[in-house]
Every structure is written in C-alpha cells, then in structure tokens.
Image (cartoon, rainbow, N blue to C red; front, side, top):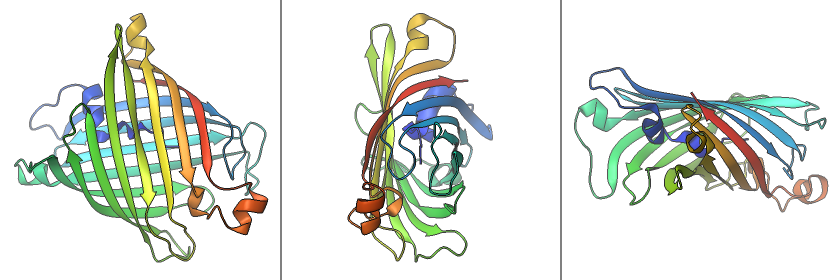
Length: 263
C-alpha cells in the first residue's frame, strides 16, 4: 500500500487550497498527482513505480480525503500473478465543531471528529474503518491529527476486527526562496485477530517546493523522497514460516524518489 502520504491532511490542504468562505458548502479543495519510484519492497515485487491521484477538501460539516494508487511492478508479478495493481482509500470526517457551530477547543485539542475510511483494491483488500478523531495544536506544525479506528475486513474475510491509530502531520520549513515540507502518517494496528497480525506502517515524505523556487507559476511542484517502513507488512507476522522462508521477511524498510504537482 502506498499512501503518499503525506495524507496531505485534510487540515493541511487548507493551507494549499486557499481561503474558505463562510457559509460555503465546499470551503476549499486541493488535488495532486504523485510519481514514486522505489526498490526493496517486501512481499510484492521489489521494484515499484506508483502514480497517485489525491483529493482533499473541506466542507461545512467536515472534510474529505481520497487517493488512488496505480502500482506497476517493472516486469515483476505479485502473488496474484498481476504485473500491476491498484489501491485506494476514501476518508470522510464529520466535525462536531462545525456541526454544532461552536469551537470545541480545550487544551491542545482544536476539534473533535468522527472519522471513517473505506479501503479498496484488488485481491481482497477491502476494509471499513470508523472511530473518533481529534485535531491538535502542536507548536511548529501546520497540522497534527490523530484518528482512531475500529477496523473490519469486508465480505467473507476472516477476522473479528482490530483497533488502528493513525496520526497525520505536516511541518513546513522555509528554505532559501522556497519551502521544505515534511509530512506523513503512521498506521498502527495495535492488536491481532485470526488472520491479521498487529503491524506498524510509518510513511513520511520530505519534499522541496521546486516550483516555488524556480518561479514556474504552478501551485506547488515538489521533489523529494518518501520513506516507507512497514513492520509485519499487510498484517503478516515477520516471524512466521511464510515471512522468513518464502517472502524473505515482511518487515519493509525502503525509500522512493518523489515528484508531486498540485493543481
């Protein structure tokens, strides 16, 4: 799974998408395309190229994030004998502050939300996630949110469901006549069920806004790296026979070159 992460947090996209107008149903939006090239992936073929479309938007009752990855294996094939695949997520959140038309600020908390995600793709990966979330004020950060989900697989897949905690963040550093953006997310599945082992997926991006530096007139054009650490990838225990002997382990530790344009 590639989620360029960034997640371009729904709060962070506000910074990219311009000013909101009070009373508008759609308050802001941002869209982007990302190209990634990386090696040393686990379980799937080691070399991958990914093209990702992302959309983030703010609404009068909450916010929305969605992405779709088109993943190409450079001549290799995955366990389903596919030379390419796709994966996506749709993540709406309801803001109780917006619904009640009042600020729900206390301590570091800026807002309280109900977060949901639908994960979809090939080869029986669909899942539904639902749970509480908070947006936090963290000094220096553009945004910081913590989403907590109860995660259930779709259809006839085995599993009673597990809990997942997903922090999302963004941090901008001025650099010369442009900016360095460090953003990303972490998916931490904290418990096991019959078919899905606890796992941790840490996926930050470090990106320099080359478009701003060169005065190209585009919204943002980033170059940089995406780091991908995934312990027990896909919920497959790295210590199992399958992980050690057939897949060469399921702990993924790699990085990809990144190009990203916003529009």
